[in-house]
Amino acid sequence: MTDRNDDLFSAARAVIPGGVNSPVRAYGSVGGTPRFLASARGARVTDAAGVEYVDLVASWGPALLGHAHPEVVAAVQEAANRGLSFGAPTEGEVELAELIADRVRVGDAAPVERVRLVSTGTEATMTAIRLARGATGRDLLVKFAGHYHGHSDGLLAAAGSGVATLALPGSAGVPAPIAAQTLVIDYNDRAALEAVFAEHGDRIAAVIVEAAAANMGVVTPEPGFNRFLADIAHQHGALLILDEVLTGFRVHPAGYWGLQAEAGEDYRPDIITFGKVVGGGMPLAALGGRAEVMDMLAPVGPVYQAGTLSGNPLSVAAGLATLRLATPDVYATVDAAASRIASALDAALTDAGVTHAISHAGSLFSASFRDGAPRDYAQAQAQESFRYAPFFHSMREHGVALPPSVFEAWFLTAAHGEDELQRIEAALPAAASAAARALAAS
Image (cartoon, rainbow, N blue to C red):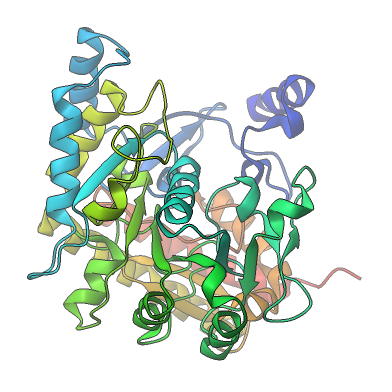
């Protein structure tokens, strides 16, 4: 017997490639039929068949306050009543840019002096790279294996055969000469970065890095690594682009940079990219940084970027409402809930005898089915990932929705109350047992 989700997936595959509009939604790594969501409120989502789940995806991060927060919804509705899109400057854009710049501040350190609003995280990182190239007059980009910065051509590059070789295309449709402008090295590997700069230093425009990796599971920078990136880039006249599309305003009021700055790790990124939370669930992203760099953007400077929907008034309204509501109490609530569930996950897997490690980046966390937390992409891949699919489906059967990939972070929200937390905790032992029974594919 099929349910409404099966019917919708069948219909979707007839008109949408793979039946989804973003690949991870297809359940390719866990199997089964994707849940087509019909509604969401607070910490819960409801699928097309009317089944409700406690949600640990949170729209991949934006729902910091919980889904459909009444004040955020009201702000969007009020904005919609004034018009859906203008293609002209609005007062809200100024307010949001000011709010972003004001939040990214710890003590006297304030790395965001100018802000440009765009529509997606991919657009933000793409623009940041073009800006870095324009500011330095150089072409090469350094990125880290396993870090995801959107799907623009130069960022879909796979590592070459040596630490200082140019990259190869990591996707069909990416021309080799474009991929060759990107150098891909192992994360947390200082020696590899030194080798790259020794060979190509006068040609490198920028290093781009997730503030804390969260697209190969959560893999945090080793102590001092982000500061090392800034130091070596600046020594060679290159820029540091800190990608906080995922971590920005989710793990701390000033993002992961703020979390590190408060802990005493002093470094200055030249450009920071934001997404997810900054738009409150609406299509909005941003990049910000030093005035002398950001003012290279048109219409002031020679680096071109434009977008009809940049600074869309509905997205701006959602972003303003979300950031204004994201108080220290909200972060404390999310941190406490994430710590509680991560501890329960650790205990359940331990009791079931499943080899695992839990990695944390502020309130973000994930489990890897290996002995010891991974420090780079190769280690993240070297795990018994076959254990995740039965774990995932057991949680879903018990009313908890997880990210449909072992290589994604888990997200808590300020709306996860005692009932939701207990329901997650109650589902974990059976899921851990399912993981323990899993067999690798022959």
